[in-house]
Image (cartoon, rainbow, N blue to C red):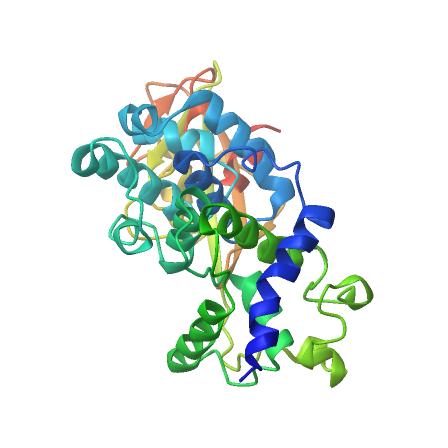
Length: 348
């Protein structure tokens, strides 16, 4: 447990540091509009800022408010999201927009507790929106923040256990600002995210420029990279997938929408097969000699490595493959929600 004086000083020192050294050029920082903050928080889950910038700008241009997002077909949302990965975020985001319109009159709830009742909004995302937009005194606890706090506190409990994560959240709440919350909470929340992203990094943290250089327990122990402690490791697996790239003579592609749940759920995709024999059987026998095996590629998901074996064949439109799907014109498929490796393959 930190001395009370240190705890009280933590928030002010962090806010002062952010004002002088934090990030101020991110496109979602210049507003307290809940729609923008929520959108950025969803996009930033599992995704780097450098990637999110352009996607965020395109999304706001296409869907400038929650009403526009709710009115859009899910296919349009997935199409604009294509390449950002973790597509369940986009599906939940669209569902969340629908519920904000239907249940809250198009206005985002002002408290973290109510925000968490919406699809795709967990405790940390809810706290980010509530603290930045409405000045609520609630702590976020994303990956960057866990790293900052566990190092600063010397918090050695295993975060693989939910009870220990709750303990860390209690400490996070104790360190929050206590006064002038409408001004200090937005700055504080941005500050602790900035510190984790730019100074207190996972590898080679820049401790010498950290505002807590002299108070950090992990630095005093010279064990910065030992925090946070999380012993449970994700078990990775591998899967081989054969892709039928069936193309009509005028450029249309045979695509089908993937079922939910499953790999690339809800996205439009080439036909997938477990082996080459099954793929070949879907092509009309008289045209199987035209099939061309393309180089294998590896696509990395969170828990799994996919080894993709594309096979290209040109077919007459009147002789489509014997597998669920439809011909999609060359001018239409680029706007659909496609998995990143499929879009890359079709764009060659």
